Image (cartoon, rainbow, N blue to C red; front, side, top):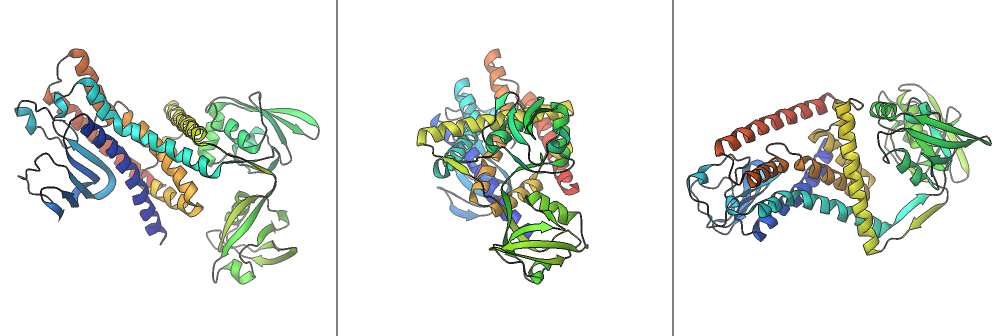
Length: 455
C-alpha cells in the first residue's frame, strides 16, 4: 500500500506541474498565432485523447491524419513529463519534415525573436507563477504562525547543532548579528539565509553570553550527511495519532492522544529524539512512559527489527504562538519573496554541489525520491503537499531555463544566436545538438533513477 500511495501522489504532483508548464507554452503559442499540434500529459505512446477531427479516441492516431490546424489533447503512457508540439519548431520529436517547405505564418519559425522567446519561456513563467500562487494562498488562508521562543529544547548528536556547540537550555540571541525574536526567525537565519556562508550565533547560557560559529563548508557537509540541523525548541510534546493493531505499543496499552513522556527515564522533548531512540534499539526492551490526562503510565516495550513500535505520532508546540494575518496583496508579495528565495537557495545548492561541499549522489533526487517525498508530504496534510508542489515547481522552472540542449533554455539559446546572426542555424546543426543533449539527459535520468534505487 505504501508504494501505491506514493505512486498515486507522484502522478498527481507531476501531473499538476507538467500541466501548468505545458499550458504556459500552449497559451503563449496561441496568443502569438502559432499552431500547437499536440498537447500531451505524459510521454510516449498515446493512451487516449481528443481533437476536433476524430473526437475522443483511444490509442495512436493514423500517421497521415490531417488535424486541420486543431490540437490533439492526449494522455500518454509514461507520467514523467509532457510536451506541446508547436508547428515549425525543431524539438525533441526530431521532426524536420516541415523544413523542406516555405514557412507558414502559423509556424514557430515564421515568428519574430521576441515572440519565440515568449513562447519558450512561458512554461518556466507558469511554473514560477504556480509557486507564487501556492505560497501566497497558504499564507493568505492560514496566516504565519511563529513559536514565541528562542530557547533550545533538544539537540541531536552528530548534527550541525551539536557540533557548532548548542546545548539544551541555550537562549538564542542573534545569528550573524541579526537579532532573533522567535524560533521561525532563527531557523530561517540559521539555514536558508546566506546559505553556504559562515554562521555566527550569539547565545545566552547560564547568564554568560557566548558566540558559536561554523564555516559554510562544514555546515553544508554535515547537513548533507545528517539531512537535519538537529535542533528543536522548548515546549514540544510528542502525541500519539494512532496505535496500530497488534503492535507492541497497542499491546502495552498506548492509545490515541497519549503523550510520550520518557524512554528509560530520558524525558522526551522531540519527535526526532523519540524516533532516534527507537531506531538505535531494535529488539531491545525499553521502558516507555506515556501521559494520559494527568496520569502517567508505563511499560516495557520492545521495538521490532526496524526500530518501530507501531504508533503514528506528531509533534505539538505547547508554548506561546503568534499568528500574523496577511491581506491579498501582502500574500502575493510574500509568495513572490518566497519563490525568489527558493530560486536563490536552489542555485546556491547547485553551486555547493559544483564546489564539492555537497554530495551529488545525496543531493539529487529522481522519480522514486519525488514519489516517496510526495507520499510523506501528503500524510502530513494538504498544506505540506502544496508546499512540496510549490518547491518542485520552482525546481522545474530552474531546470528548464538552464541553457542546455533539449531544455527550454537550450531552445532560447538557438533563438538568441539566430537573432544576433540574423539568420537561422542550419537544421543539421540544430538536430545534432538536440540529439546530443537528449542523449545526455536520458543518461542523466538513468543515473538519477539508479541512484534513487541504491539509496
